[in-house]
Length: 467
Image (cartoon, rainbow, N blue to C red; front, side, top):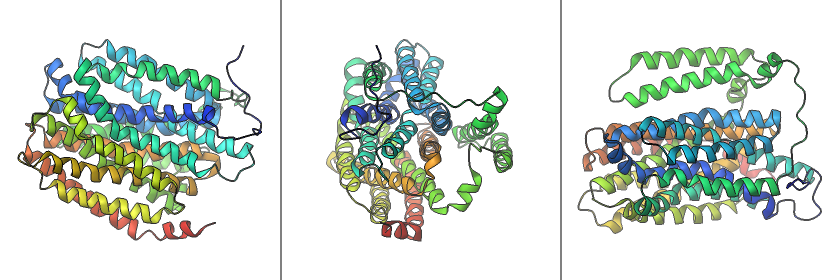
């Protein structure tokens, strides 16, 4: 007997009840949970594997590299094969990754687990956005209730910031393996809830031969996109040493990608759309830079607290707990607003304020001040995540909202990859106040750029005036 309920027709009652949205929120939270919870485990992993703390940056970049490609790919697969099928497949991969990571005894095995986590969790957000869009259409609504999209953003924003606190508690009690085995119970619950609450997809459309299907998915575009991202990560990971071959390879592959996508019938990366829809492109860039700033502090401050200030993983996680609480509260407040321009400007201003404040942190700074500075980034994360997601929903074409949503996360992961390179470079030899201040100066430049992009974006004001 099937566990799924029939939601293919417009529901008689609330189209967006808890049974439907709960598994979507859980699935979409798996990626930010795994992005943030690892922060408090890096020092312990380095000690267990007998490597430098800076070398653990690959555990961050490997997940983000995989996610940067897999997010839009999952969105495209969902549009072709059905969002529920892709969602369930992703959850199964997360379950497998939790087992692999829990049993790992080498850095290589941990990298494999993180790649599996990146691939599996990437299905959550773009499929959720597509399922919500289609649910609204079936219910005869122009758009889903504001609280539904807000809840999706709140879940992601809150778990990013609360992850270190939860991770610090679990890692302190049970060891670094917690950062991996936590996926087993969470993925199991999500899988059961999805089977019960999300109706089966209709049979996928027939696409003929494998060649026709490959063209529909734009497999070559995916490969070129993944290759260029990989080369970028190799270049960033080697900093401060300059790997010119990697940079050259990234540029060559990027040029090839643009050339191919301009001719592709079903482009994986719609270059024409990005060029014509400036508002959508600026949303991607703004989201990536904002998350770059947030993750630089998330990873950099956590490592600094554990090494330079001598806090345990548990204590470092507790110190960042107010950041998580403010992220959730701010996201909730912003999700109830109709406009996006003022929240995005406030996000940029707060990012700049937090960056400047971080310049004055040091070994003798009272912990209350450190916590207050981190809390500023909680406000930034909550406002930016919700407002950028709303801007995406307003500007993205309805037919490709899955791929467009995945690309929003991709730009965020590009920022996260860069944040891992920045923290890895600043703390390559030792984790100290000087390295933290180098990170803060980079963050000041990022925040200033975000503020300029936001203030001078006229499309945001026009979008706020729409009915």
